[in-house]
Length: 440
Image (cartoon, rainbow, N blue to C red):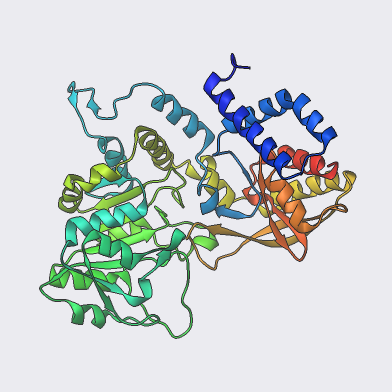
């Protein structure tokens, strides 16, 4: 066993096992026969614990929840071919910061900036490790010790209880709230401007929607204020939709292209939401402002690594080729045909009935998720599953603990599976997991 595993590791795991057995004996929890069995099977138990100890904690899961950009499950899955090509670059030396044409040191931004400039017709671009870092860098660079005007209706909280006012405080910027939660007028922005104002910040409330007696200035109105006063306008776009989409559930999502065309000085957004790439914070816009951000010492602490750079570059290339809707997983899921989902679900249902499950199909809704297109529902077909020997809660838990783990949801005492977010090649894995649970 020490040939396969290191001697120190075997010693540690064996010591833990024996210590646990001693505690059980002292507590009177182990009968004589059970003790003999535990001692004689120690080799088998030890090997099982060693394998478990070395299993990666981060694992692939099957997402059957119908939430396309599922934050807790890693947000947007990267296209398999992009993952393979990025891994190939990351597992070798690369020209990450080397200019091959000139034979001298280069800058890692070069690989992504040129592509973003072509795609969005912007002056400059830089990339950091996530969207929160992008906003932090913008505020720290452009507004440290000065005021930033934000509507009260845009003081958002993102996942993990991170709140915009807290990010602003950490950046050194001073928050200047205007308007009310439900109504902010363009005059509120004008009235708040002083010689201490450094930025006007527009934040897309991408994970909630305020309805009813509301008002919010159009982006174009804020651009006018910005140009009248000379105070730059920053648009925190959030979800990262580059271009307008024909999909009805994305009709109200603002786009990076549209924001820049309207006159925003800087636009920042995520790489792993509607863009469909790796986690990253992307900043595009006015060259002088981007250059200042690039020189900020915090940029080094927030920069992306070679694997992220490679995956993001390859993802953006799909947009340049106009093939992103056919090649990027989230776009294939967003546009998946209802009938195709229904046919896949019908096939799975028939095999589950043979395995002893109670299964049925019902129309339902998927969601974009990930703080994108709040309130928008995507028509789908749901597979409703009940198991004779399992409650809905125990079946959901068994799926979650299967290999690979399956994430589903529970509604009306039934386990709900939405195949919109299940890769077609995972249907057989899902069926195998359910068959194994049925026989457990």
